[in-house]
Every structure is written in C-alpha cells, then in structure tokens.
Image (cartoon, rainbow, N blue to C red; front, side, top):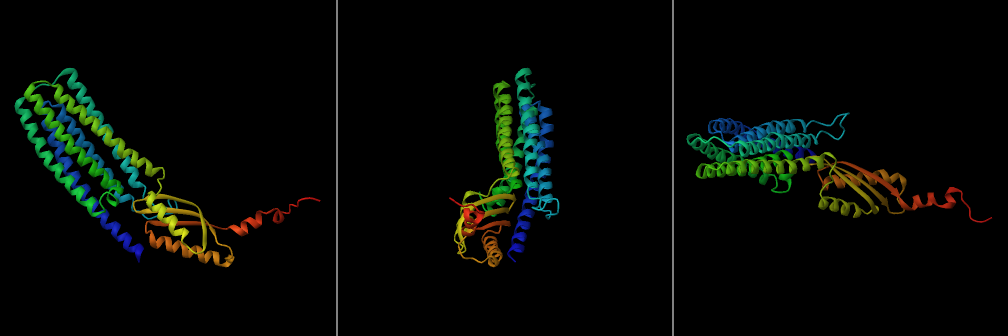
Length: 326
C-alpha cells in the first residue's frame, strides 16, 4: 500500500514538473525569437547573447521532457535497478547545451564587439530594450512558477533533488539575471556611446552561463557515478539496523541513489550469538521490511548477515585442523 502511495505521489510531482518545464519551454521559444529579431535590428551583441541563451534553454527543456518520460520506465532484465538515472543523464546534456550554445556564443559576441565595435541604431536599441523588458516579465513568471513547485515538493530538500526542476530554476534565475545585465549594457552603450559596456555585459552573461553549466553538470556527474544517500539518511539507517534486537553490530553500510526518490541499501551485519540458522532468513526478512517501512526510498535492500561466534569458531586453529606443539 505504501509503495503504491509513494508511486502516486511521485507521478503527481512528475506531472507538475512537466507543466513547469512546458511553461518554461513556451516562454523561452517566444522570447528567443523576439530577442533574435531585436538583436539583428539593433546590432546588439548583448541582445544576441541573450537570444542564444534562450535557444539553449529551449533545447534544454526538450532534454528535460525526455528525462521525465524515460526515467519512469519500469525495471527490466537489462536494467534491474530501473531507469531513474536517466534524469541525470539528460540533465548533463542540458548543462552541456548551456555551456556550448549559451556561454560560448556569449563570449564570442562580447569579444567581437570589443574587436570591431557595434553599429548604433537608436530606434533598434529602444525596440531591443522593450523586448528585454517583456522577456524579463516572462522569465520572472516562469521562475515564480518553478519556485512555487519547488516549495510544494519540499523546499530546498526534495524539491531541489529533482534534476529537472533544479535545472529549470537555475535556467530561469540565470535568465532573469542575464536579461538585467543585457538591459544595463545596452542602456549604458546608448548613453555613453561606448560599446565596451555592452561587450562587458555579453561577457558577463557568458561567464554566468558557464558557471551555471558547471554546477549543473557537476551535480549530474555525481549522481551518474553513484552518489550515496545524504549523511543524515545514512546515519538514521545505521541507527535503525543497530537497534534491531537480533543485530550485534553493523559492520558496514553502503547506499547509492538509483533515481529520484529511490535508493539501494547494502549492509553487512553481525547477529547476536545463539540465533538458530533456521531463523536467519526470517530475521533478514523482518529487518528488510523494517528498513523499507521507515525509508520508502529504499526500494532495493541487501543484507550480508554473519554470526560472529560461529565465524570465529570456523576460523579457529582447532576448526581448521591446526595443532600447537607435538
């Protein structure tokens, strides 16, 4: 019953995340077209950098939609632990997209403006600032939507564990800051007539996008190579195991996140003396059920159970046939 309830909760969270990603996708596509047209009319490097930023974000939202669909496939023979890590793979591709399409293009625009200058067209710049103002409102609305959902899913805890939602929050937050930088650069260029202000804004947008791509890529990498559960959860699992009356000591505990809301748990424990071998399986089943009931995310639990006194007896010189003296 609890497993079904957890799956239903995760499905609802996925549906809300999908709506959030779709809202961001539609907003970014419309904004990208407007920024590109405005940037070409005004010959504005900052505005063209922001257009590349929005194109990168749009492509990333497509990646995130693929992640939401593919990561919920059930486990099969080739992938016995499921497809939960697909979320992190597609999030890694999104980070690469931000770096290449957003960051690198913004650096290119900034250096080109410094090298050759930029043709000033007052009417085009006014139109560009209007476009950026509308983009700021749209990006802000998308950011509010993403932050609201993150709050519904547990604030900075469960909400930020979802790589799709985390990427949307990072993209929208970066977009708001990037639009602000572009507006400041264009306005200062118009007032002073010096292109260095707008080129600097484009370079700053590029640096911002590279930083965000690095952070998102690092988080995805950690999950793909097998990140453990958070230390607090691991400590609680160890305490739960140690509190079991049949367990004498917990020799080792290993955890690995296999997806959003799913975790593999493997423990090596020593049993107290006197437990019959016939009861070992019964004890193992009961302990696994106790762990699963307390930690719903632990969907794969493995116990390596040993009986220390019996093990020591088997390894003693007498048991192995070794004799001291003549």
